[in-house]
Length: 175
Image (tube, rainbow, N blue to C red):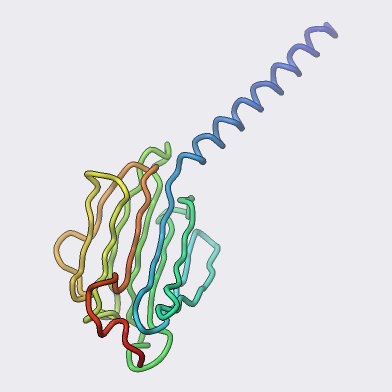
């Protein structure tokens, strides 16, 4: 009896190690979400993942960016919400990039939307994937056009860019 309980304990420990390695391996294959800001102004980035929220200020003049490995964020996924930090465009309008991992981590669904207005009207916004065949979203004037959602393999990166380089010299001039 003593030998069988030792065997069961060892087997349980081995199964736990194999499971942990499997979870880590799945996690290591996940892509990342990026937010790049190349405008001539600062942008507040509010990150909401379930009950956790944080804020970062991204300065476009310094080409600031945010990146994070895909993660779980509760029922609606993770929201990365951008809005102006000051000036006439600092109203309650915001642009939100939302992503959600599938239960088995195989795919990531993503969307881009505005609420309360169009905070970055006149400034190009793109949401692209590093994977071929994944739907890209492009708002040439910062205003939603057409389909604003997609799905892709979760090993691919999602890249949101506000004022991508080469869109307008006005985006890069000093205020």
